[in-house]
Image (cartoon, rainbow over all chains, first blue to last red; front, side, top):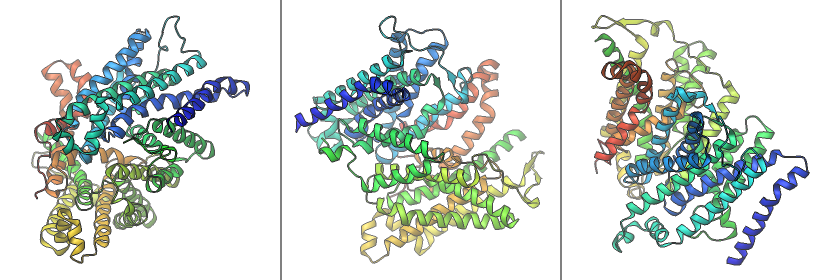
Length: 311
Length: 304
């Protein structure tokens, strides 16, 4: 079974590696942009899966870190700091810090409270973004220049940026896979399936959950840094509750607590969105009921069709 | 001083609007253990239906009645068609399904009425101002909103604590299975409670229409503030919803009105100019964080 899974991964990676050459040959370079966007958001979904799928922490505010990562890059570029290393490190560090602050308060609460609190804090950051007039406020601002990594990689080259996103997505998949199968991940998953027993065998879930929350925030901050470079434009909309909801849907649609789930979910959700957008301006009136139906009838997600979720 | 009093009344008016939303949400959560994100959509539906019906009939009151009835019917329909199957699911599924409903309703409203804001027209008898004891004047309509909100609060208190329906609601909140086993039609009770919650949200929406703009997505901005209310007040209790709503309404309004000049006077005018609006819009969320740190179950948690 494991080799089967690996084979599936290998086929998908080969397809993704071949994609730029194929679509360029077909004269459709638009698809490089589309798939790059999907892969960047997949990193955010992968990070959310760590806390939502494996940790059982239903965060309705994960877009916060996407926004913080993006704004870290945008604000540094605004003040003339274009070094990609510095920008991305700031994006990851700032996201981790904010995740630590939000997590420290909200993980004390559970269940429905946790959902509402993470949503509310993210909304607070959204309003903060709107009130930052220097950085464009409600309208957002253009990214002054793409992150500069010297001669190492040029993000202005769409194909090079595409391969960087692909590589970082695969690294994220691998990192989360390693993490959830480590001792740390075992405690995290144990706390999800039975908190009382986890306490009884001597583990307090709080520090593990908080650590996972911070790691997920940092990883999503990296996705935000990539996303700012991808769009070239930042708005508080990155932090909107719809964005948080979308991220949750990517994870659930693909299959919670599965390695491939978030990637699969992101591809399917965003491709369906793209399809519907091409069909009608009012695509959300179709997408909404589709999402409701998928929740009611499609309980284990897409990955559940291939194999049983791990946790 | 008169400005302060005026802003206090504004805060009260915003607070009762939040209360009408929070009451429905907290009742539905308390009795069905169901979290309904689409509660904001019912607020929006109430506002739109009231504006449309008022234009159609030419009467504000007829519009309000039709808007209220419309929100009730839409709420019950949504419960019957989509949400009923989700009561047994975990909160995550409920959040996601109702998130899908929000997308649907926002887009449907945009198709029917367009994306531009609508403004509700008030009849002459609600358009005037009254003199306040402090010497300034205050819009009649906002006073009317406060009166309606407080009247609904009293009515809800009476229904929940003094009637048979209220007894069933309280019993359902503490042990659903037992109430069902005692021969109460729990499905019907759910639909009724959901409908009442929807009507309250619709009432909040149609009363907010003439004050704020009516546009797609208006419900979600309020909904998130209502979440803050519920976290502060404590979930499942109508009393918590009322007190939480008044606290949030007043803190938010006073913050927006006075934080900028206050910071300007205390630190420097530029500091007030720069940090005032940002801090004011974050104030209720910071308040929520403080309440959570000190009293994780909220200030007025449900008893039992």
